[in-house]
Length: 361
Image (cartoon, rainbow, N blue to C red; front, side, top):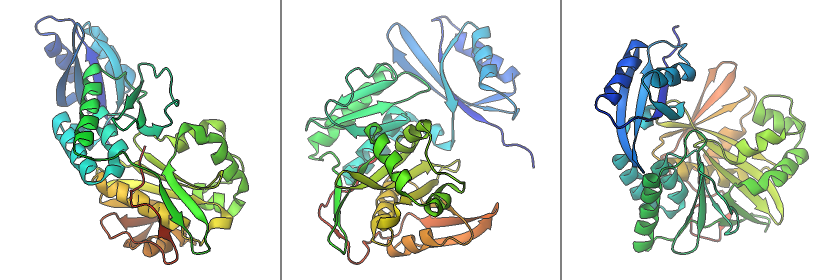
């Protein structure tokens, strides 16, 4: 089976001279690259050209594309892997995101992530970020909610930030409130809060892993994990273009759920980790339901989980959440396909004490 050609998203700064962009595209064509999409972003003193490029050579590297741009006098200010969703033009993507956020305030962070083409957007305490920097943007909604957007592959432009502020103004003008955490009460009377994960949760998430049994960790990571390296914690809480939801009781994080886009535009990978003492009490069901609502609002039709052949917990959890799931064997694991379009229900004995949906970041 031949390797799949790679698709890249580039932002290029060019001299304001006739034919500069044409020379860049000709140089890329010489490298057997096909330009799939092109947009122009105004910036002070000129413009940035954003190109989505597919290389005919599977071994094409980002450095090869950067060299092609430099050879024609351009400067590559950002490059990252792209997928089919990046072929949707920015106005269409922004309108869809705004529509989702109007219908479901819990998807505000997801909508901002689309508008900003950000790696992550999370709600934070007002003092969460003092000096964001060019790859980190701090936005404040009219109700005082603070959200922080991060993007590692390119700085945010003022045009993109203006679009994000316009979305916040639109939602505020329409009476849409910012997403709030969701409180649940388990059947045995314990109060649990679901909320977006944030960077300040590293120590609590590390402690969660330390309290989990080896079996629970093996079912989650499919490897013998006892402690989590510090570098993992940031990606667990702020996965690029993904969503993390934590469940906590009192001052402890007791569970963690993630939703991460896959290469196919309609699918997202889902994973859950629930502390042993909290398994079977509806926490995992609530997490999966929150992630399914987020996925549906973002336009995903399928959630995909990977389980060991003898592990049936995710299938049972999906059934309790009212989601249809099917499995098939793939690469020695069970690929669990969960429909994101089903009616999410609460597990018997678990009550929601807030009507808001979980926020995503």
